[in-house]
Length: 107
Image (tube, rainbow, N blue to C red; front, side, top):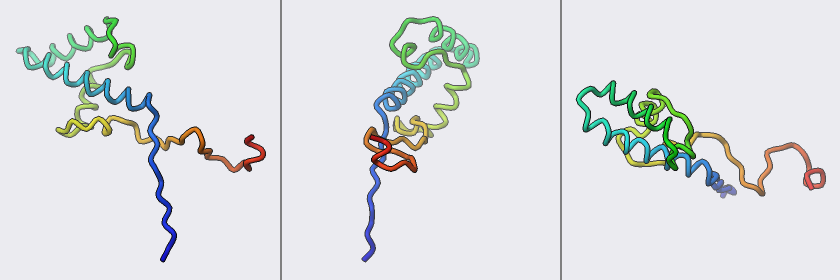
């Protein structure tokens, strides 16, 4: 039987926090759009409101664009799974190094 090594996917807390903030913002944006007659104008108004606010979501995400909102919504693909909004970077934990250096050199 082969030795199987299980790799645990590590995701930094900042990436999770960022993805959850995106999900919250998308929910607020969709609620904002539901109340509007002109969806395109609502998008521009929402982005302007967000980018000029001092909200927690602004402190996490910074300035956004209308395109970002639509891209994040498409990434969700009709789900509420915030992990779809986490970038697919190869994160490593604090104790893992992606290097060719030996342990002696690292320490």
